[in-house]
Image (cartoon, rainbow, N blue to C red; front, side, top):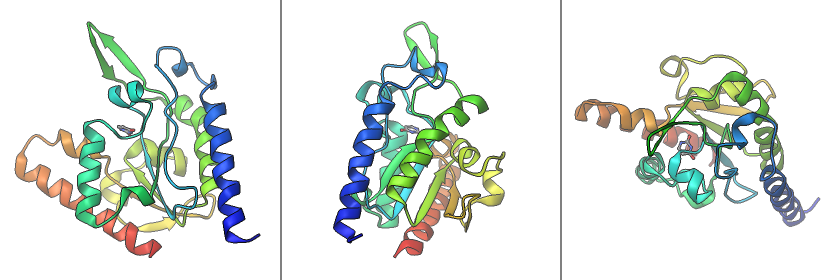
Length: 205
Ligand code: URA
């Protein structure tokens, strides 16, 4: 199939998936959340970034990585010389899971059954986009795509084969960088994230 037709087909597939995902009831997380937050980016992206789940701001905006973690991610991508507009960015879990504490909604970690239920969408996105490399931001994304618990510190920064035979690279989640209390240690964590993103970009060049 000519490349242009392939890209149009992938874009149409993503549009269909996004519409379907808006009605998703594969797990109970759709109930309290405002909306499904589906992935975004060009259908022919060579690099796909997979985060954990939408946060409070993403849940309201309906867009991935627009809150504080997104700002840190943008900063890291800029430092790595990677244009976010060329990436397909999505999450392992498409609904915000939270605990209501007074007026505040506090992020709650998705459990394995929720990660597995949502993998259907992530696999469909990966099939449509067919990225050269999938970057997993943090343990939830890594769990979703490897099917096992991953120690980020031990496994980050190198390209390896995912169970489906495609290339993957694990790095830290931007929120983990934001949570580092000491400024110098936080700078080092950001530098490590930038270095991993550089390695990912070099792989797809
Ligand atoms: N954290 C994520 O993992 N994804 C988002 O979209 C926002 C914050």
